[in-house]
Length: 387
Image 1 (cartoon, rainbow, N blue to C red):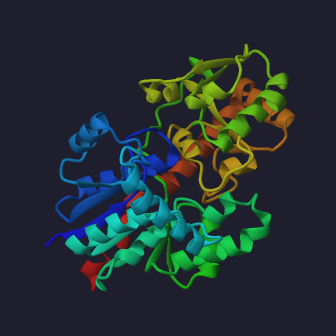
Image 2 (tube, helix red, strand yellow):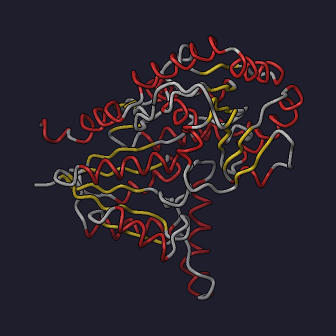
């Protein structure tokens, strides 16, 4: 008999190449490749993720044996009376009861989850994000093994709320305590969860296909910089412009992604708002950069670059979550001039470049291949077969 799995992710995993969605696709791909073992329902939020007719079709084509369950977080304003009495008022009471909490689940989502869990009996439930973690309260079956896929340390994302950090952290820990197992992708977050919860904590290595090829002597692009349009990336991009670009010369940065909308034109930057094949940029670039000064969790684009054997010039936040802070193919500094100097040294000093590239390859192959991630997933999700 197949293991029945409910996997909740509020976002549409096919809507962009953002890091959290990359991880969601990897897990869905794992279930797809093991459909003989797992029967999976994917539960998502219709009016939170970017779900439309095209994305629904794309999802069913890519994952034909995974059942898609969509529930709405709100009631459309096309029905003002229903919206007022069945969404706004209940949600107001939910927020009052919630107080200072990382929880963002709405009355409507909890009601939708209640219906799903009433109609289905799952062996395993995987819920993404502590901020949506209270969905698990709607599971009444004692046999369901509950896993929280944290993705990120939510309290750290709210560090600007300095007066309430303690309450937020306590609320996050209370949510995690509802689960049997806690997944994290960051070695720093693994330490925090192990220290402050009494739950099983699993460090999942974010994986990529091994894209490493033989060393090239010629490169079409000097530098690639890939980023989405979130506040941390925007802050990092502006720091790059203000603190790094003034010290660079005789090179060109290929900027890729929605981050292009948030910075001005610059003679050293070639903007690529949307690319059809990111692979060809990685394969033809000499180095990658990650100029992030804020944010938590592992940086997916850093690992993606390492999967191609590319050296990465990064800030300290760029190597958050990596298994090793040294000997990983990343050259790290938090000052703009040194960041620029590291870029120029990698571009000009071939011996230094080849040494760094060899380190990047070694780190990736020892820590982040599909084999490493799937081995951990096998051990975690097949626990019932061992009982």
